[in-house]
Length: 97
Image (cartoon, rainbow, N blue to C red; front, side, top):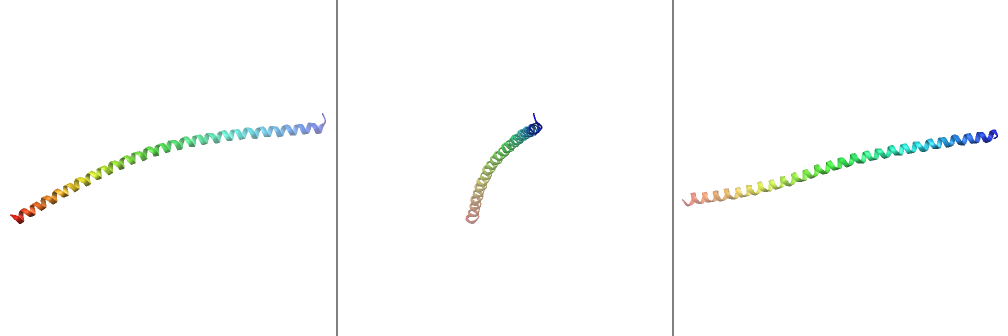
């Protein structure tokens, strides 16, 4: 084989080796990126699940508070009505008696 052919084959071998190295590097980078994406997805899924549970608990507490407030309001209204009736009866009793 002549020297120019030998040099060409050697240069092609170097190029092929560099291309193989670049391809391996791309595969490693891609695999690392996919691992990071999977980790991020798992973390976000956990956080969203935690937020969902917290929101459900807050909604439940809000309903309970609304029911309590309605009950207290009804009791206060009933008490106010009773006091009004008692005062009305007391006034009639004092005026009439």
